[in-house]
Image (tube, rainbow, N blue to C red; front, top):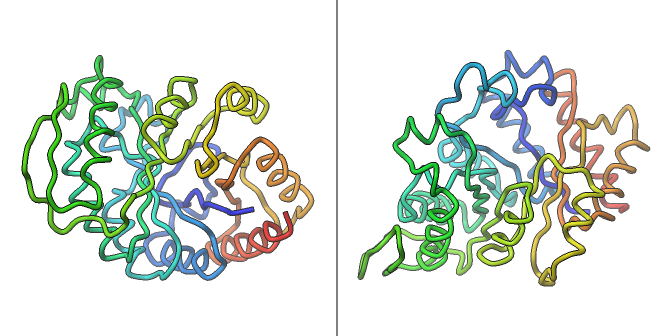
Length: 284
């Protein structure tokens, strides 16, 4: 079972972060990223929000490290682990912004970028950034077309309803010929969008039985990544059987990669937890 690490510290979701994270910083996060790299984790994540209204932060959290800065730092301190935006809100950016910035990251990291992308749902943030909230789905579809035509290429053109340009040079660009695009969401529409435009689906907020039901209703290509959450934060050192059950259920739901949250009492304890979980995953 391949594992993706829902990174601690850089995103603080209420109910999923541990108390030690409040006083930790870049040194602790770097040690965790290096340990996940050594342990063979497929990827680690960093999500995007620019500014969250205070009343909404109580539900969604208010801590979101900038993914480009964070993943660039991690790229310099690791060798193999992939660097996944989970998620980048498509409507906040011109597609060539994403192609240039994350294409550069792909180059300097040796081809380790995964672009986890989402349509977005926080209207106040769209308005703050001058982005189009009512048409965000249509904008996202056009941007995804543009991204697929730009990533990994020096000369790009695109003619769509929202983005239109011709004979532009984007240099440097991604070194992967096909940068993986994973689409987030929790609706049948998000799954259809992922199948049409992407290389994987990263759903959230859905129980495994619902996920299995949604997946059974569509034809999924053999090489398509299903990156499914493994549930509540795990403590494999203290409860090996619970961790094994959680990973097994996630695999049975259709996951090609299990995205995991870990609970711990300190950064050092967190590293021990991720090492223990990696050993369990090898048996599944």
